[in-house]
Length: 149
Image (cartoon, rainbow, N blue to C red; front, side):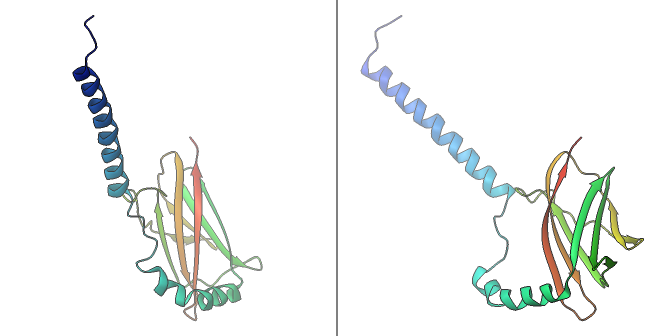
């Protein structure tokens, strides 16, 4: 083994920092390219109507229960134990940390419960549910779905 010179120490230091910076750049690129990080386009504008929308949603009195089993996703929206009169249902289903798996499953009503056949991989999924009441009031809820295999 040869003598450790200043050139060797410089090469080791520059190499170590190059690896650290390179890994940081790769991780930052992956983070930005897989998840846009936006819930809404403009938080200030969205906050202006939040209280009124929440009050209207609470006045509906709807409760939402969801489940996933055997490749079937179910959403039960009810009021006082009776199926709620939902006129339109839109669901965004995806991973909480990346947008590439986002999908809008086709739900159908079966016995008062909304169901969709969706094969989900193991892990945590996120559902953004938006249901419309007959008077046009929106019911919104974000839910987590955990899939175990």
